[in-house]
Length: 236
Image (cartoon, rainbow, N blue to C red; front, side, top):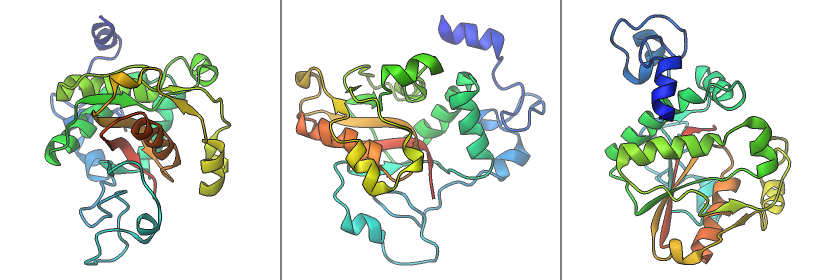
């Protein structure tokens, strides 16, 4: 019913989600050909763990940071870099109530998961604290997770992980500070629901990885078998 209502208010694939130009019946992900050509897609020459693109051609498969860090997730997949028009798109999606954009972002994410042959037993979304979600009106990761669940035909366990700590906005803190702030920020209410499950963890942006790593740590310690992180954009 919700998807049907959104289709009435924002008819899909009529106008480019970047420049608002008519698509005339075409446009993959509701993006015109010109804007599609300007999207900063993640290159193949990137870290196999965090997807960070290498600045030069190299035979190294893991970036220096990942070789030193302890990750509770297996790897991160993101179709695009958090740059240029992608930044504007994500900002509109999160803060300008354009949550209908989640459909097209999720399509790109689902296609990447298919191409990389990444699946799982269950999809979870990085949770927002109620104090943050209530004024915004929605959790952007939840919307992405719902669409991806439908696209990949994988069960979405909403509220299988919750945020118990209302942290400050993390963008102004260093990676070390973020780790400290996120300690004990997440909780798994029913561990039996995720026990031995291969989980696909959804979020909108991967920057330092502190948030998804904190989520993954709690999930692994609660009995999950493995975590693969799937985000729309990857901060560089």
